[in-house]
Image 1 (cartoon, each protein chain N blue to C red):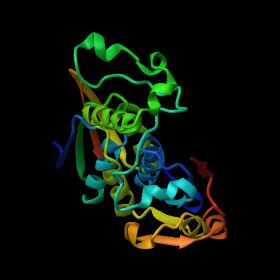
Image 2: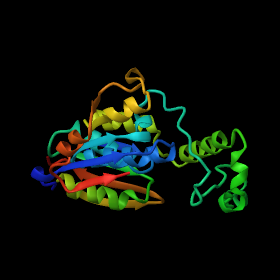
Image 3: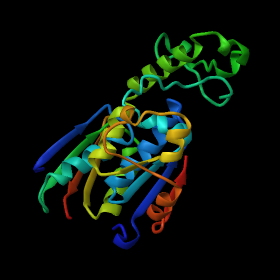
Image 4: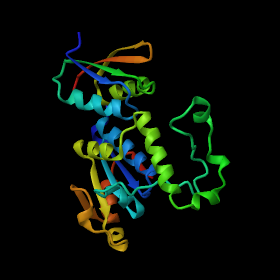
Length: 75
Length: 173
């Protein structure tokens, strides 16, 4: 289960990334954040974001146009 | 992971139209969200992007031949039509044309969930993007420093180079 959930539905690039960053920065290492997005571009972008920032993308799931990213705050 | 020794990024923002306000703030805010240390150097018309009042920023259809012009509302068949190539450029000289096109672009952006300029700009500042306004062009164009948002530094080209001395990402927009 996620510790926090961020609903970024309806928002477009780069807002899902910016809001993810903000949400993660308020969390402690090891905590899990679920991000919900309707922006198809965020599939690649969340992955790139995690690659660059060292946070761990645990899973990506799609459910009828909604993407759910589960991210572990690492640093 | 970002290389901590080489994570500087700079942008030179030179354009002051409504449409071109977006790329510098989008790239800068995303860069800083991805742990880059970002500086934007605003010069010439780019200075307009630092004004407290951004309501005067306009997108110009004149000499902007690649701008798609589609209706953000109405029936689907109407929304599909690109009016850009269909309307002779001379018609865009009619007073109010720029305001109309700017209004339509704002509507389109709101519909697509694109952030407002002020929102992106304040996120940049919240994430500590450094804004430098070119002192020379501030004076050249007679800008009043009191009209700029808080947190802007005023400096010259040499200061830009100091910021750009390291890092791999240096963009001109």
